[in-house]
Image (cartoon, rainbow, N blue to C red; front, side, top):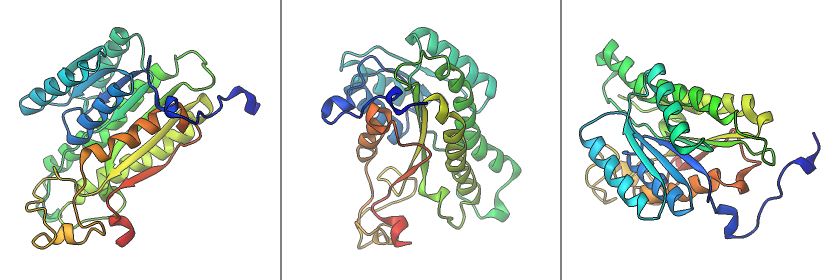
Length: 272
């Protein structure tokens, strides 16, 4: 295929204009998922926001949907168990029907159980793998079918962004199940990038470090928090520092970027 069939990269803020794009954000009740959803809406995309469970997640989801609508976007929201292959498939079909298709897929589940491996039960393992790795796989599988239906528009059919953790790259004691699931997400990203590249679909991952909303992080001051003291920037990250990267990866400017993991971690992985 000739290079001429691919679009030229834009050089201005127009390169990040997502007007007319339709984005599915799974895990939109998490810190990163919420921030990414709002950033995509601000950039012009219509949204389908999905949370994996009810309760507090449903309340956070509705709040995010309300804020996204203030940008004048078409926004739908629902709670769905995407750790089920059938649940993910039904949800994706419904979203594609209501939005008229899907151009951007963001997976941002984040279910952590912190236990020593000898005290991690079969149920704990299954829950963490299902809530992170399986959920991401099932959504990618279902959404991939929709992305492949997109008309050949300058060879740019879609964008997939998987939000994971630096613990998929670096292990941590007492978090074996979570580390394994996150590592699976990063390698799933690499595999899908190769599988879908010829179809004009890019697949990338964002790996978060310790964020202000990370569970059990406690006092965020470097003087009293050993974890924060270990970060070169000496602070935890914010979800709104993840969102701009997601907008870039969702844009036409990132058409030659695929199969990559971008670490948003304050230099943590470099230090380690």
